Image (cartoon, rainbow, N blue to C red; front, side, top):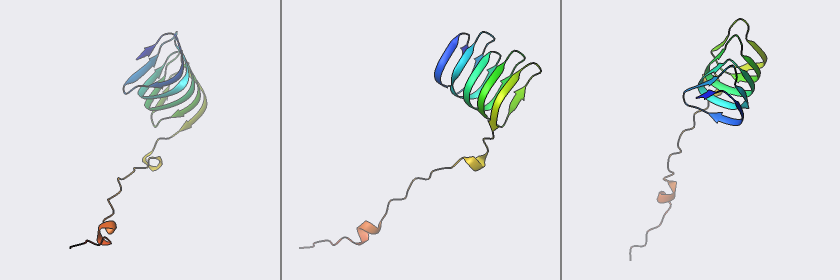
Length: 107
């Protein structure tokens, strides 16, 4: 997905989001990879983030792979997305104790 204009809100992409030099994004973004060559303001969750020479990013970036090229700028906060922060939920096993306490009427 490529943004050449102005987008505000929430953006979710399973692939790459490109903010072109003419692009302006004010949003919460979740994507596999984000390439910023325009203006980004918000919160960003991505595996890989590249800020190109004309790119300007402000806000919070959650990524373990951040690259800022000469000329690009970033004002904000970065946070790692390590496995320690991810909590996996397991499906609860059915409780068999209810069947043990049942009394059957065999008349």
